[in-house]
Image (cartoon, rainbow, N blue to C red; front, side, top):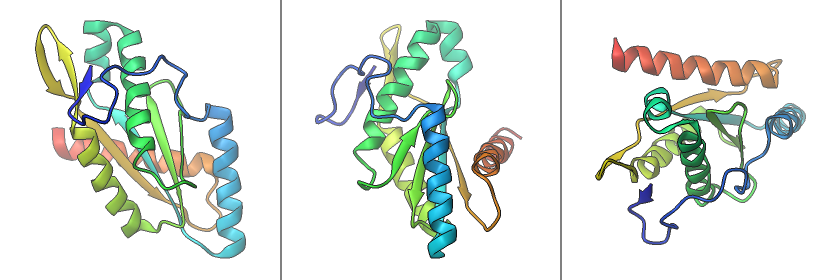
Amino acid sequence: MAANDPHQHPHPQAPGSTSCLSAAALMERLEEEINRSERLGTPLSCLLVVIGDAAELSYTHGSPFVEEALAFIAEALAGELRRFDRIGRPSEDELLLVLPGADAPQGEIAARRLLGRLRAIKVESEGVRRPLQMVVGLATWMKDVTAEELLAEARAAIQREHLQTHG
């Protein structure tokens, strides 16, 4: 696996070495941000990032390959985030970016920027380099929405995106 960016390491970090929050820590942080947004009346958005062809990659290269790819993606995205944004792993095959202060239009801008960064990441298989098929789902917090509901909305956005692109 390699990236086109010369400032990126040519090989991903070992799984678990990223600054990603665990699922439990991520949900705790998301609850904190929801409470802050509710208290201060500020927006909050989340971006859910998944590898669209993760099942194929896992079948072809094994699940450690997908784990390594997600760790590498998390490292690449961490450099694109603001110092107070957070990234975590809500499940073994997802990354969630918590974007305090970002409303829906700002979340969409961030999603487009991050997708551009993600498209620069390539995997190498049998001597051929190709981009990962990345999908991003955006969810913006609204009053009385829980962390679990916000994550579910981001997952639903991924499903809607998948249906639109794959009919």
